[in-house]
Length: 333
Image (cartoon, rainbow, N blue to C red; front, side, top):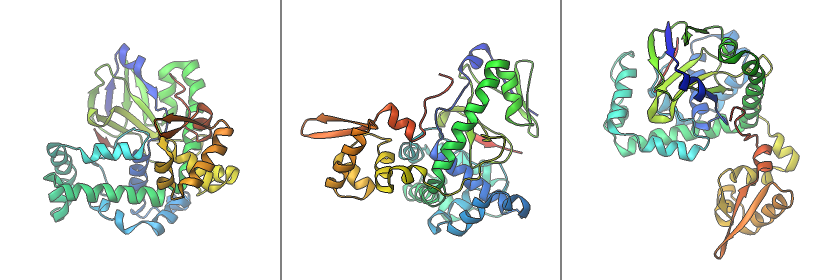
């Protein structure tokens, strides 16, 4: 059994993630696909998105199958809670050679045969191999996760909203007891059945991350390299695992191009950058920005001869990027 020890400071700093992390959710989607390859047909039937994800799995993402086997332990390359995909991938590109080598040695030790050449190059910090890894994860995100992001956002925020009354009424002990049957609180520590080990949080607390794509047992990320300690668990906004249907409710409401503009402005951009990101003309980007500005969804500020667009609080809410309601390696079993 794993035990995570909490101090008073750890409890004070234990909180829900403010938003789902696209890179981490892409990793969870990959792990679900790997688990589904073990032949659990009834389980796959209960999660239709897995069948569709297998069908659209991009060729560019195939190197990830070398990195992630169907069984843990798995490397922590993509365990970043950062809510921006590009920023999270920058951390991957900047991974030190020693970190890459240790992670790959730890995970490949439990797999037969020798790793492929490109993976050996990755362990040596080869820039081309790192680029291949990053392109593979971005390809998987674009094909599998991005089309389901609206459903993932809804599942994430619904789960957090469902947990907050439990935390308010019963504290952390009651909260942890509701996250998963393999978790329970005892003697100032969180116990996770099915694993072994003991960890401290060094006063940093634990980031709680409900995942729409992960339906397995809770995963502990004990790794300061990628943003600290985290507990990833299966989101269940209505007491059920998310179905993750491909949909675009925002696009239906305001139109697909305008929805794409709003999504692109999750990161502030100038008009030209916005046009390039959404793949429309600068004139069209300016027109869509005006409509969104008139609706109080974005702000536009002049910076010298150019302008910069950014989301308003209302715009972030429309995207599902709500503020927080509460202010290492992935292990499984």
